[in-house]
Length: 483
Image (cartoon, rainbow, N blue to C red):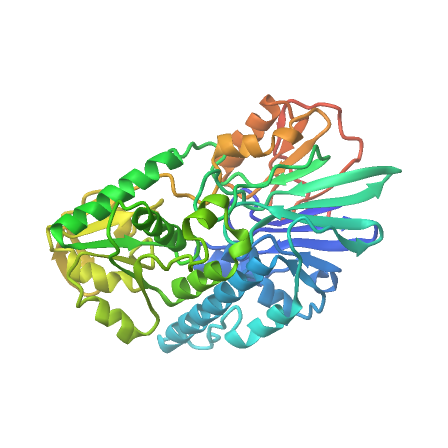
């Protein structure tokens, strides 16, 4: 087997790995890199050599950094299958169509600006017209269903507990007269999170692991703290007859906040109240979550019975701009969940402009907010901020709830990987910045894994080529693919 690391190597986004085994070439994820415009443009237009002739793509889930470059692959000529769970197909469609629209709008905006003599127009990475080819290539595969790829190679999806439809992949084949296994974790979710099931337990040890390390050197706040903090915020706006604004990701986080509202109402902690989802993408994602009841955990199924997942609160899903404007006629009490979590763009800005100078309104952040964004400035206690073209005094209340990440932290990843912690196993640690990846690689070896490496972008290696029985050191040396 040969593995070429083609993305999310010593960084978080752009997941992509090329597996060559028994004469087959298989891509694990084809994700988009998210970063500075210049670097992103270069990496996102690049594909591994002969990528269009690979035999199959195995897609772990529908987040942009795992599926976002699929239209580049199909537009370049790939005609093969893209295996994914039904839930992932539903989420990926929403994410890809939104991504294409944003890229078209960005290119149009940049091309309206003055360009130098002879400067080529900006081309979007892909357009909405490129997405249907990806959707036609999707082949739905359920959890726990062994799928044969040919030449004695097979894979199985198991529930990763990250977002709707997310999966980790167990690849099986025979090499050197021995059965072999590779685990591709993709993104592993937290335990005891709402709606979807916890990560499925690994069926046993494996030979090779390609593991994420997004929070490999971090520890999240306990999930048990999330509900009480959110309930207190909701009760406060009920008492004050004010507005609770929740800047949120459209996929996953929005649905989690909605779930908590159903739980509070079901338990009698609050009366039914107006809740608004103000994000076209968030509305579509919520509809997908409502559709795939078979993915729910036992607590969610018991709570809602035969009702719709979001049917207990008086939830309004705002799609059009007019729907969004109507929300500002609600003075409270109400909850408004809107994109984006950074508060740099999206419909949350309209609601902030109305609430920012109201002392009783509350802005609640429910995750990490990057530096140098309006969201972070509010979290850091800024007294005056600019929204669109006007400056505002910050009089509203601002809080943050930690612990709602969709990614497992270092302890949870180790818990998930327990069956692999043995001298015979080798891990390749990806999907994390260097400090996170290297810290987690050291933790794996310290916990009993035979070897852990942090590969570099476009490096490749041959597995099972005289691997040592145990190598307690961490290797970050990469061999270029063409070497």
